[in-house]
Image (cartoon, rainbow, N blue to C red):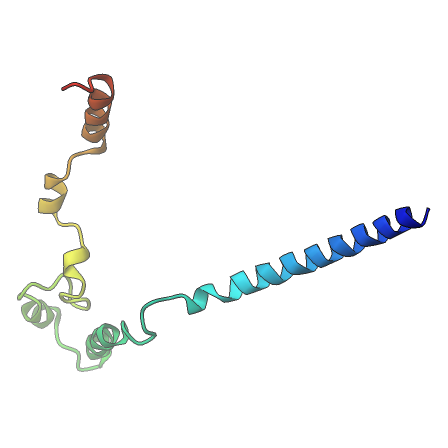
Length: 118
């Protein structure tokens, strides 16, 4: 009789401890991803300051005309505000033509799957 009561008390306390442990684990896992980032907090600040300065220049009452802004960015700028920032990451028509379409990729995969010797 005493051992049954001891087992029940042990089971209840084990459940409570396990629940508390899981709650703590959830709390810690939600707090730590922000600390796991590799980049510094100010790494993108330099680019953004340049973009912000150009935006502020456009917002001024004596803002340059659209033609002047287009002239400034003729050296390869994507648009008046962004300029050449992260240009290499953008998809150009040339890059899009070099890539095969999903349909072609699927056909190639299925051909390799059905004809492994070729």
